[in-house]
Image 1 (tube, rainbow, N blue to C red):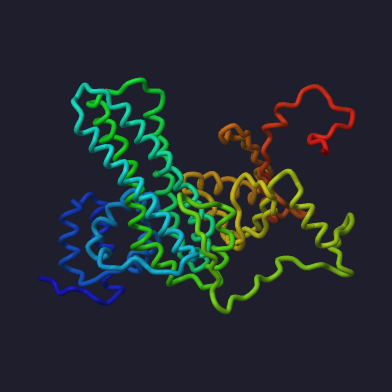
Image 2: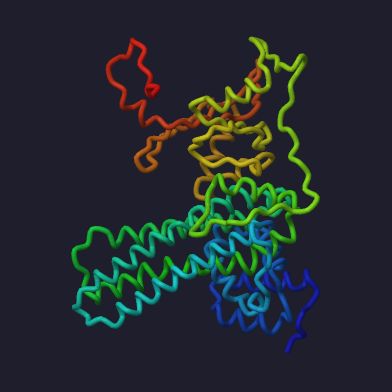
Length: 415
């Protein structure tokens, strides 16, 4: 029998070798047995480093995402020994964990209802029970804000510490979960009856897969992501996550406690005024408060990405279409998009930098809202590429305009 390995990089090399076997089609149970034989221990930091090194060595994020659940199951024997991290009430991780407890409760409710369906006669109508499941699924879909806080607040800080691959893989898993929950709900809409036999088949084929994916993500967060993040982020960075979390929202739990770490430093001013307190431009000047108010009032969302693909600015509108947080500043724009749309981002940047294109337009439907998105290449007087400006606007009401309005009429009359 081989001697168990304890040196960190040796452990990681062993894990990488066995994970490559999974990617080549080896059976999970066989890989698990080898892992238990060869490794005396492995922890969350090893898993993060393993994924980062595999990506650096040429395994695509998509491939790792595809077998991410298998990796976690194989490593679960080691990860199960780790305690879930403890934090103070109000701390972002404490809030994430409380949300997970609520999500786990909804999952247990769904599994109990699925067992109830199993007890019905084959031809018996299972629709009343499945409607209860639908209600619990709608609750489970509130995981959206939980994932968005990870994507737009937590992941940017990990990326600034050069931890990029694992967050991108996890974001891809988020999208899979979103799609699975949506399909599970849509499959139960508009039904007038549902024989128990068909309901059981549906539960096994679609529903069980969707709720298990949420359950697996809870495990990955608590055994891998959150311990790594607590080791990596400073108290100042956690405080910034805490301050910006309410803007995105919470999932099934709203923290009632305030949290502020000791010796917190006040945030630095993000802008400064020029001579005589005015920001001077070729065609005029602004006071700083005027300029800030102007960008807050514009009926469009602006995001500026510099020539090195780094997010440098976003306008602070009250009703932004897409989330932007201060954690995004200094972040590579490639990391600000879900993996499934990354190829589009790369194509736009390539075409703008080469001079092949200067504008890319999109329009999408978000529920009842029509969203218009335009990317512009910014260039100096010589035509050299300076960066990209994203302009996003909701145009639902604009599309409804007909005729003319030539006389003064306020949209909201004063009382």
